[in-house]
Amino acid sequence: MRLLKFLIAGIVGLSLVGCGGDDHPPTPPPLKNIVETATDAGGFATLLAAAGAADPGVVATLTGAGPVTLFAPTDAAFNALIAELGVTAAQLLGDKALLTTVLTYHVVPGKVLKADIAVGKAISSAQTGVFKIDTNAAGALQVFDGRNRAATITTTDIAASNGVIHVIDKVLLPANKNIVQTAQSLADFSILVEAVIAADLATTLSGKGPFTVFAPTNAAFAAALAELGVSKEALFANKALLTKILTYHVVANRVFKAEIPFGAAITTVQGETLTIDTTATITDQRLRKSKIVTTDVQTSNGVIHAIDKVILPKP
Image 1 (cartoon, rainbow, N blue to C red):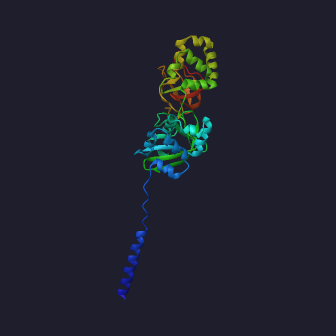
Image 2: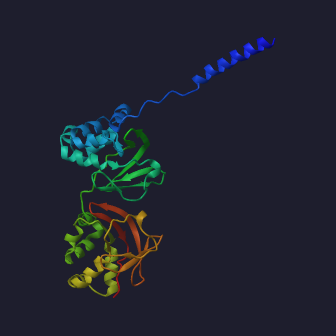
Image 3: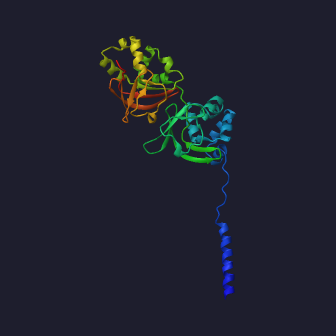
């Protein structure tokens, strides 16, 4: 009887050992690079064709050691871009310089997972232009490009051997207007543009930068003229005063809303400081208040925040 029990126990033990070997999950296949991953996923035919038609460095980056992060527009996104630009697919794919500029703008050095995204802050691309990613009212992540267009991130964290892919529903475009050109394209800043030209600051604000401009609206300028008791012509003729006021509205750095050091003194190009509180209210050197009414208007050489009152340095 003891021998029988021993034999049964041995058989059961061997069976358990054999079954235990089947409990180990199969080894997952090795990850593929970004180009191979996008190819296997499907829906990125135009993106892949564009990469092949661009400078060879684009494919080299997406298949190299990395790591890099690719914001990958779908085929539908490229079809929408073709309609937006008023070109054919053949014309788009035939413009090597444009493709190289646009595609490298979708690449960020390093592996940036969804959890690592610097929401609301400037993100530098391989193209050198910047964009920002923010959360909309519905909680979705959106990419705001240099032309202030919005693309929604529809899928995140697709793993590749040399980085990660986030899928977007719109092709991103880098900025093509500087601060002055952007202000000229917006009707509510026409007096500001006149003032910048009168103070001979247009060349500076069209330069490399980056700059942050707190841009008074036309209504803000009209109110300031009444407050100062001068006409527009008289203020513009006083170049020294005009320059002092305008440079007080400029910070020598790109500062998105999410990067504002609330409560801290912010030094302007004019040399004096201002402060901004968490309600986006600016306090100037005369303790006057101005509200930031529009934030993060991107340009090629910085960012514009619209304000509802001209801010003033010390008399």
